[in-house]
Amino acid sequence: MARKTDKIIITCAITGGIHTPTMSDALPITPDQIARSSIEAAEAGASIIHLHARDPLTGKPTPDPAVFMQFLPRIKQGCDAVINITTGGGLGMTVAERLAGPIAAQPEMSSLNMGSMNFALHPLAKKHSAWKHSWEKPYLEATDDYIFRNTFRDIAYVLEHLGEGCGTKFEHECYDIGHLYNLAHFVDQGLVKPPFLVQSIFGILGGIGADMENVAFMKQTADRLFGDDYVWSVLAAGRHQMPFITQAALLGGNVRVGLEDSLYIAKGKMASSNAEQVRKIRTILEELGHTIATPTEAREILALKGGDRVNF
Image 1: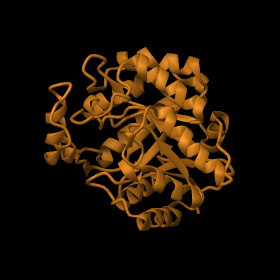
Image 2 (image 1 turned 180 degrees about the vertical axis):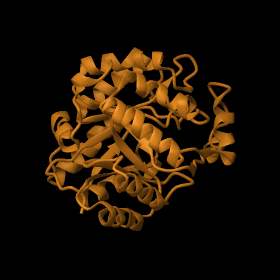
Image 3 (image 1 turned 120 degrees about the vertical axis):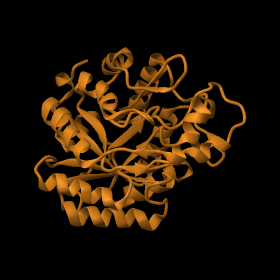
């Protein structure tokens, strides 16, 4: 069984590399917007803030460490949340580009996708006829011929240089059952040490489908592979977000929300902010009798190195 705790960790993914500026005016783009949105999400109850960087002029995902450094110190100064920096970056980035920001920042946590996959966003290109920026539509359309690369060599490199080299622990993103077995390989090799966070992800075209039966199947598989060495969390894309993470909490899991994963707060209603999503899931969880983990408690649960040992 997943490691049991009496507190639920809420992660908030602030901006991501999937949604484009045309899709929502609430999507944080500039360093100022990302910083303010992150602090608001932490104040609402998120103990982990998951971050990507974007070109402040165009909104396109960027791996530039200089852009990360325009908002990371502000977030650290404005709240006590654990800062989690992507190693996924954005579509088309090389592994070296994706690692540039986290290697420079040496955060407490980073995301790490546990396998190469078809990461398909091209259906989103049909949802809009007018775009704020010329890059958006081609960026999405190109994903019908795109493989998000995360080979065993790539993963081992990240674990060695960012994990062992910087003391960073990982949000191990598992988009399918095979990704759990890939993670088990690195656990067996001693490159991933408990406690480690497994983020089960549902509803991305190219990954496991958004069916409730799959939530239990993913957890049962992880339980069999990892016993109580892991901490379980769930995110789901788009309209599946709130139902799936509520179900995960009922099964003893932790949860992730944020505008990276869904632009909505309810059916047909766009979210006004990341904090709004955090407040909604916090209310649901507390009504169900759960207690929300503070950043200090999240650090203890995940055995993180602490915010005083980062490079920003």
